Amino acid sequence: MYGSKYNACIVFIFIILSNSFQEVYACIMYQRFIIQRLKYCSKVKVRYEALSLCESRNFYCGVVNNSTSGKKMKPKLNYEYLCDPQNLSHIEKLTLLRKGVGDIRKIIDLYNKMKSLPADAQERELLEEELEKEASLIPNDASPHLFEYGEEPRLIEFVNKKPEFDFEPKELHEIGQKLDILRTENLGLLNGSRSYFFRGALADLEQALIRYTVSYLVKQGFTLMSVPDLLYSSIIESCGMSTRGERTQVYRIEGLDDVCLSGTAEMAIGGYLRNRQYCLNDLPLKMAAVSRCYRAETSNLREERGIYRVHGFTKVEMFGVTASERGDESKDLYNEIIQIQRELFSKLGVHFQVLDMPLNDLGAPAYSKVDIEAWMPGRKAYGEISSASNCTDFQSRRLNITYRNDHGEPKFVHTVNGTACAIPRMLIALCETFQSEDGTVTIPQILQPYISGLESIKFYDHTPCRMTWIKRKTYTGKIV
Image (cartoon, rainbow, N blue to C red; front, side, top):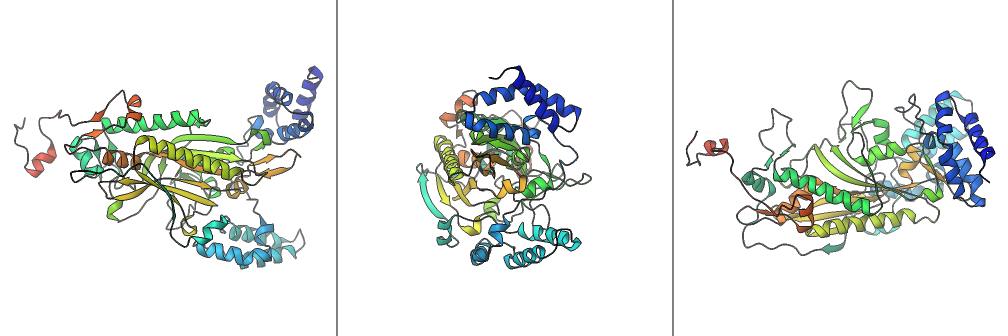
């Protein structure tokens, strides 16, 4: 069936659809892959999968349109939902409870005015731009059960026993100073506040956490990705984070055209998937990335000192893409990601609580969100170490990520994301949980294979004298 005439037919189709010699060449080189995919399609689905492959040639042929890669796309917002008068009170309540800034009445008014004008009217284009700007401020819909929560999260469960000590447990910055493995002070001449240096065993422990987490995720079917730190603001905003205004947490790069530092790998992966279309049987997709995350954090709270809230840190992120045929596919992957977080953290031996977050704590993209907070004995408080969000079609409508179902109909995918390991906060929880009175930190057994079998972190003095001892007049040895 798949003889040379079919090869020629597919190449001919791609040549017609291609815009340049490079695209023609790329498509010809890719024809064998297309034939293999067609072989695995049923007779009913062949026609639609071939359509999908042809119409989304920029993905399957690996062609990138550099002329538009940094330009802001028009989001394909759900105006049918937003401008339905029956949804007015629900959206107003939703925006109020989520502390949003969108005005749904203004959106409906703009929509009706635009629809009353001829398609070629100049005023219509201006109204359309204003409508898009206002509609983009409305947050995602939310799971119905969250409207019952008020402003407090709902506790789902506690995991692992809270540690007990027969001495006063220290905070990580005290432990790190004694073991000479962490520096957070006197960095003004290097990189300013809310930054840090890991040294020796703590740097090893950071890498062990990354290897442990990535190894587990790959076994769970995640595809590992390496992502860039620099992104256009349009990509970040399409993922649901504002890049402008005094309260933004996004760093902008001076001298570059609308380029920002990424706050999480979720944004880079979302940008990677932009404008792509998948077949139904390609989904779900599960991806993971290790990246540096940059955030313009500000806080004067005592409990957020040290490395708890910093401007740059390493994080392992999970990102998933699902279909929306049944309506609960993204919920299933969302629950799977939460279970993965639970298993990763429980095996490390830290005590933590799992919280279903209320509406006022949801970011604009989230339909629902679960946070996990670990007990940090030195701080005598729980601290957030991860979150997971089901964003349904909020991000895909802004990034134009779609799939074709069995009937050949294009639909928006749903996206899900979750933290697999935020390194600084996990180090706080581990070092404060497994500290000894003499300052030694025991390495959890599950991590020891990833850190050359090291069982504990101890202080080894390699210097005759340390400057801090001189300043505090506590050094009794010989200064050489």
